[in-house]
Amino acid sequence: MTGTARIAGTVLLVCLVSGAWGQAVTVRDSLDRPVTLRAPAARVVSLNPSATESLFGIGAGDRVAGVTSYCTWPAEAARKPNVGGYTSESISLELLLSLKPDLVVTGGPVHVSIRRSLDALGIPYYVFEPASVEQTLECLSDLGTLTGRTAGAESRIRALRGDLAEIDAKVASIPAGSRTRVFWEVYDEPLMTCGGSSFLHELILRAGGINVFAELETPWALVSPEEVVRRSPEVILAADDHSPGFTAREISRRPGWGSLPAVRTGRVYLLPADPVNRTGPRLGEGIRSIARALYPELFP
Image (cartoon, rainbow, N blue to C red; front, side):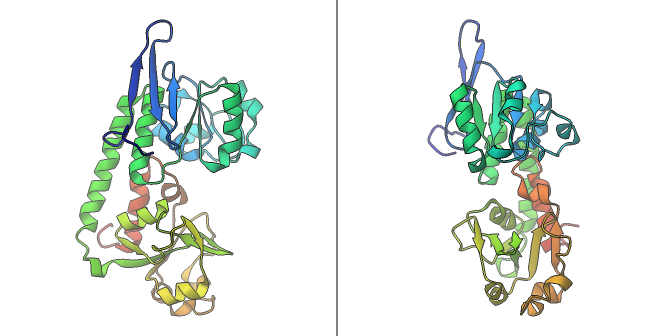
């Protein structure tokens, strides 16, 4: 989502077209593609759980005609017609088409195949795959434009910026030399963490933490257990869809991990998965949950 066309954090090109088309709208998606609709979408099928949360978050839930089985929040989303799972292979194109969408919102690489089908059928789609907090806010703005819910999008963005500013102000009081070293475990077999280009890395930074693998250039990277021990994290975090057995006692059985500061002090936490994994309207909640794990005295 780059380029000189994006101004003040969002592209919002509104074209007035005479005739039966009424008011056309154009935005640029996460692949920097122009997406133009003859009028704001009235029937949207969302294939991305983050986008589904965002559509409901900006007040466009009434425009959502279909979702996937992974679109579980808010509760109303789960009651929408279901077109399948998350990947292209698990999505039923037949079911999707039966919902007569005038816009489909997809995710990133996992939806390449379904996007080819939509291209062939001439069905407009918007790729929702923000890589940062700021890009998430831009995507919220774009969805507001595409669904005619610009006021709802602006309201949600203001609220999120307020949350972020409040967290930033508290984090700013923590001296750089006193910030907590964090290891985020994405998977345990094989052991995987988040690198410096990942969305999770940005959340850790905004929560006042230091990602002990920040120098890794890939978003998701395999690391050795020995290297984690060498980097001596003070807190170990994971999303709560990771494993119910993810505790300080459990991971102390890993060779050498019992000596880690995080394990010795019991600072091993599972955090609610969706707010930290999904790029949507619960961003503030996700960052705050990380900050609370790192600095409970500042974030009670």
